[in-house]
Image (cartoon, rainbow, N blue to C red):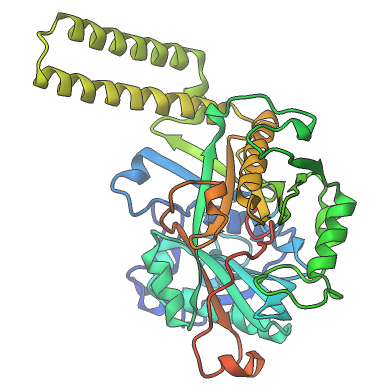
Length: 466
């Protein structure tokens, strides 16, 4: 049986190695090598990506809900946006001929690192953003994830990277434990403020000076690409002086190419000002968050095609109206009392919640785009947050008009600008983790101490979130 193990196949189309001692990743059969564009590597990596789940911690979710993030073009399209990049695959060379395998084996794992020049701890440094570390479930618990992480870090060191950072979901305790084992520390507790645009009421005025909700005397102007690049370079570029505090991860180079190389992803940018005893100013930029990856929905109880079918729409509408009519009739004929009131309220909330969920699902599946990203928010002065709140509201209306389903802001939970996006302090939903790749590259004061968190008013590269 041992000699036949590499050829066994599981239901999902991958070699079933659970009972094959010789197939441990430490064996020679698992090779970690660079991704090869234009080969079967692309299909293998995308198949691995399609198996990833963001909701494995929810009981029965895998049966009712099947969604995943998918690269829109080749698997390495996101990595190629950066100045330099590392894309590595783990390939089981003993599985040639198995279902889903390429010409030289089965893609069982992957990892990517985007490399750029940015600010960190007051200095311009070469940073790596690690993402898409995945291991096929039939190859897990065999140290393959550790090998991929180590290989990615080594490749980054060879390219002169000083520090590396990544993001993990707040519900993914397994991933946080994994990276902590490799010396990663907390960089930032993030909140993802995703606003469904189904109920985004009001017009989106072409003249930004007609925005509502701004303090008296406020002036708003659009900032075109050329001015956005000029301002960003003046603040964060290689000649920025003096060094400004609180701009961790702000890009120190390549801003012009970032804006100009993908003009279709940059949507708009605004600056709002109001004079007074102390001047107040706010700024915000809107990007297409579906730049290189998009959400692929295979099933939400039913497939998207089933939800969009006219017969399904008519049946849902009929069911909703019938339930509401039954509820209203029951209330009308009941003798009023506490029990009736509580039962009626509970039933109404259940029906109303289902109605809202169905409306939101129909809205999302009918939209052309999914995510608009509000990035690089800034606010200063006594009216800064109020100005930023007005710009955020305008950004949401513009995103809805352009066919997006959600407008998203990603901020640190301690960020003083949070009230511009949400009035209550939210709980962390994602975490940014960081690691210095060598003691010799770390600042002297950090070599014997814990690396401090990122500053809360930092600019995050929209490529990281696309």
